[in-house]
Length: 214
Image 1 (cartoon, one colour):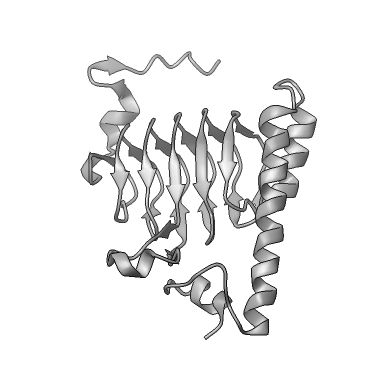
Image 2 (cartoon, rainbow, N blue to C red; image 1 turned 45 degrees about the vertical axis):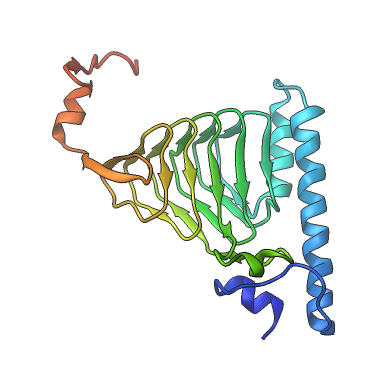
């Protein structure tokens, strides 16, 4: 069973030390991808002025597997690879976003991330002896449209978050979150559905002032 197959099917794998030629070649592919991603983000975080929108967009286009329109990521931000992350239109991330993308991360349209959000597709086995050589597993993460993820949220491997979802600050998302819901906590659980009340009141007992978008 090849390294690539193990990585892409949620099985245990090691990134280094393989004997098969196919696996050694794939190790080199991954090493180049990681190096390229880190070099590009070093430039993005440290060498590109905040006002240089053109260069920042060029870096994200070269780095990511796919990137839509009106995408802004506050520096610093970090990716394990970058090429395995796909971001839709109208995305905003506040400071210190971390995406561990050994497997694919898919983010929809109109998604906002608060500061210090971590999305990790990778974990390690519970049994300690298995971790001695860095054994791990990776499962894709999917985030839908119109999602707001609060500050200091951690999203763990294999999670799918539906459309029109709010994840409360400080939550640890270990399981799927259905569409049209507010979810909070450690572990993160659905608190309530999003309803017509939320169309009329932007927070409790505070009615929407409809001139805000004019």
